[in-house]
Length: 162
Ligand SMILES: [Zn+2]
Image (cartoon, rainbow, N blue to C red; front, side):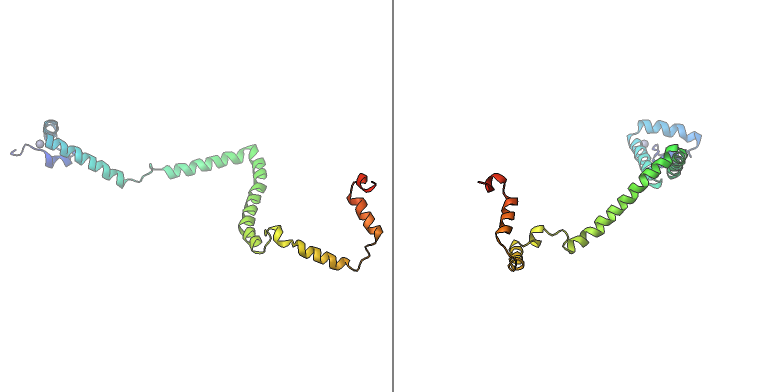
């Protein structure tokens, strides 16, 4: 063999496809030759990288195991005496939660647009109220009796009977 290096035999070596007669020589050469040793390390790393890319990210059967576990937990929950009570307890809560969410999502903008949440101050006009009161009470008799009743009820006794 004229070429002592084993670069062209690294790939079959990694595949385990080298004849037994070559195997010992290649192994021994990789230990002593820096260039072939580096080529071997790089090729091995590259192959590992490619294997990692080709394989699916999750371990085989992971999805099946998750499904199996969920089904098992669901079955265990169904058999549990607490399941019925828990379902009965959480069902109204879940319905209420959905209802509240719908109410907030739909009701809030509608209420806002219809002026339901407008500040009270803008709806109540004191001047208009006084004007309206004076107009409606102008034809009423505001004699002394009426005034006395108002004073008596509005002020403390000590102030009135001074
Ligand atoms: Zn070499």
